[in-house]
Amino acid sequence: MATRDAPPAGMAPSRDECHWAMLSHLSAMLMYLTLVGGFIAPLVIYVLKRDQMPFVADQGRETLNFQITILLALCVGGALMWVLVGFVLVPLILLFHFVVTIIASVRAADGIAYRYPLCLRLLG
Image (cartoon, rainbow, N blue to C red; front, side):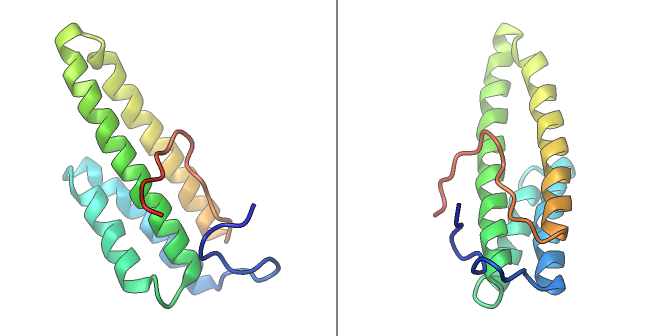
């Protein structure tokens, strides 16, 4: 399946592109320090590198979509704390976020375009 802005088949992204794409995914971990940091850092990388590095643009967009999805899921989980379900749901969402972000970072470092599961693709 071809991805938007991904390099043509047969052309692997450069090591520099792989590093920036990995950094875009890993910077989402700033969510654990500041709620919005997990969105702002990948956004800055995306805006700065999207015109020069197609692989980074593709993975940056994917990271931003996933961060939006996670923030929405955490809002729902927070609201469900009123009926106690959220106390189980929120830690599961955070664990899911942590695990798939690490997987995405490793794949991006290897030059493989990663698609997050259960992700709303709002930015096209």
